[in-house]
Length: 246
Image (cartoon, rainbow, N blue to C red):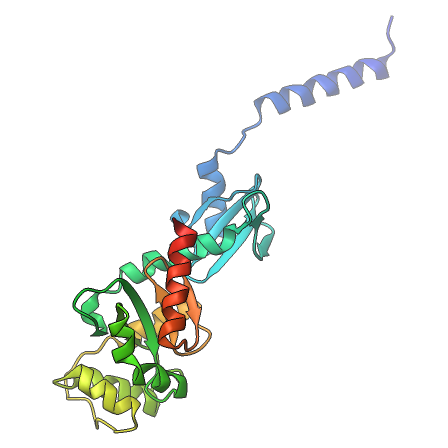
C-alpha cells in the first residue's frame, strides 16, 4: 500500500495538470487590448512586429516594441540582416506617410512646376536661416520637377513672432508672395480678424512626425530628409529613395 504523502503528491500533480490544461490562453486581440490599456494608446496602434513575442506601436516618427504582457517596452531599430535593411525605419516611413496623406494641399502653400516628378512636404519657419536658403532656390527646385508643399512650423511655438508671422502669411491674399516676403524678412503685419489658419495643426503634425529642425523635408513615401539640401542634392536623394523602394 502506497504511503499517504505519496498519494497527496499525486493528487497535487493531477490538479496542477488539470489547471494547466484548462487555463485560458489569451488571443492576439486580447494581448493587443491589454498592451493598449497599459500604454494608453488605441488598440489599432498595436500590431505584430517582425520579432516573435514583441508587439509594435508606431506614432509618426517614433516606433517602440512591447513584450506580450505589456510590461517591458524597447526603443530602438531592428535590422533585417538577410535583406540588409532597417525594418523600424520602414515602419516609421509608413506611419509618417499616413499622417502626411491626411494633410490636404489646401492647408499648405504650394510652389510647383506644371508637371511635377516629385512631391515633398517641407515644414518651414519664416525666421529660419536655412528655410530662407531653401526658398531662395524654389524656382530651381521647381525646374528640376519638385513640387513643394510648405507646411508652417514656427519653431519657438505659439504666441511668438514666428507664429504670428506664419498666421499673417496664411491670411494674406497672395500666400506665395507673402511667404516669399516673410522669409526674406518683410513682415506681413497682423493676421486679419476672424482668419482661420492651419498653423497649430501643422505645428503639432511636425512634432508628431519627429521633426528635428527646419526645414524638415518629407517625401511622399514618408522618408524624412532633415535640413536644407540644395536642389541637385535633394533630387539625388529623391531618386535614391525611389530606387530603394522599387
